[in-house]
Image 1 (cartoon, rainbow, N blue to C red):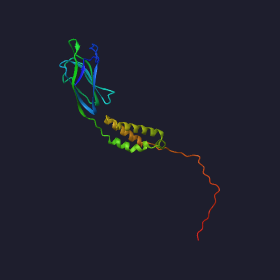
Image 2: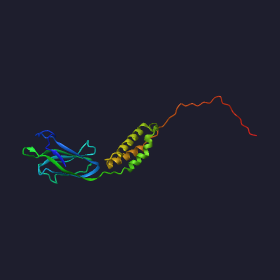
Image 3: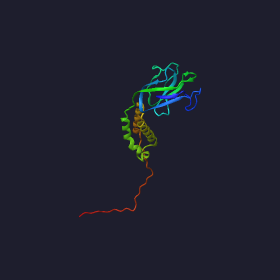
Image 4: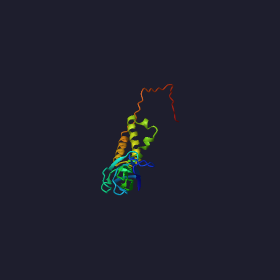
Length: 212
């Protein structure tokens, strides 16, 4: 459980001004979340809060909120979602008062339901393997036109990033695979033109060979 206190600054006397509390749960892997349920242990006092998910704990996607003054209940404290996430954050905004002060908030349980996020990247990996030699070669920039090679280089680096991204979507993988395949097929060889070459031969003599 998580004791969020009375939404005052920890270690200081109670304040009428609300200091929002929050908690972040690390699921330790990426999941296709379907449902999040909160359970409170502070009786029938109402709570106001927001729920977010994230893949990196930096940028957060809003899932839902409870801003009513009804006591905790399964209907309002259950959230449906289709987010890919590793982190879940609960941001506490307000809580009911008793005897002139906000009551202490205790979150008893946070339940998250879904399945491990998995995407088939075999085709993307195959394209990366096929084109890696071109990308790694020291003279590739001289072998192909600058425009076609720059497009290929960008597509290859994007494919590498998507392939290593644990929360990549099916569409991201498909686009990265197609883009790399198209860029590979569109590579244009550099045409080397040789002009004004004059070949001369001087001071030569004829050698006659005879056999007996």
